[in-house]
Image (cartoon, one colour):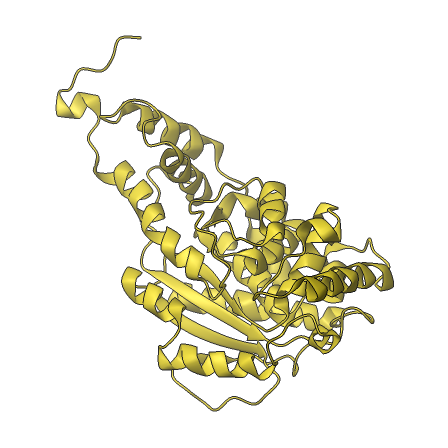
Length: 350
């Protein structure tokens, strides 16, 4: 499934990009007046291979949840069982992601790819468990290559099922205590940045814990003997949810459906996806810029410009959900705004 999905991913279509840019210039507004929204519409046209691109709605949020062996190193003040508890909160509709999803009409699917507990069956829960949390990445590989492939294919499968159910835009979500440590390690490995530059405070840690977290990230990079190939890097440093999100991204790109990224966890997963299939970046929209420093480094490496910058650091898909109406607005302009000729409006002289 992974090889087939990667083989299906194509870069942005040059003809659709050119037509979208030309169409933007024919609309009844000054050229460039919609700023970044024009860039988004053109990007989605190139990704879809059609101008105007399809409306990116309805949207589907997938929250991939897993635990992390590196939690034992004291990188987070939150107990590991919070991952399981928050999954319950998502399923009960009580999280911020649920409120934002209701605001934009997005469906919410929670995917257990590695929570350190057995979860009871519930509506909206998919169990694709690959283990009860990863191994400690600071002592060796977090997962095997086979587990990484399984997690990638779990993400692809979720993307396909949501698209088959009618979704026309995918939004990444995550839950996993200590997952910003794995994210920082992935960002270091894929961008070459130093751990001190990209390791943030996650859920709000003090200076001592932050310093420890940087040390743990550096140790992980050292003991795993980088550089490795993209799959090896993902297996060594990622969480089950990182790999599944990378697969989710690949699945959306293969179907030429836009994927709106959330924060630093999604950004680090997107780096892995782009390392496996470079053309995947043409199908991504950066929903927001996280307060986590590694997120900016990931977006810069991917060549993505965030739509929202509100100092968010929650995860769950919240930033991607907030950006979805902007993405829809950008495409709606292409469908509904008249051209100068059609409206009988005089264009400026050139």
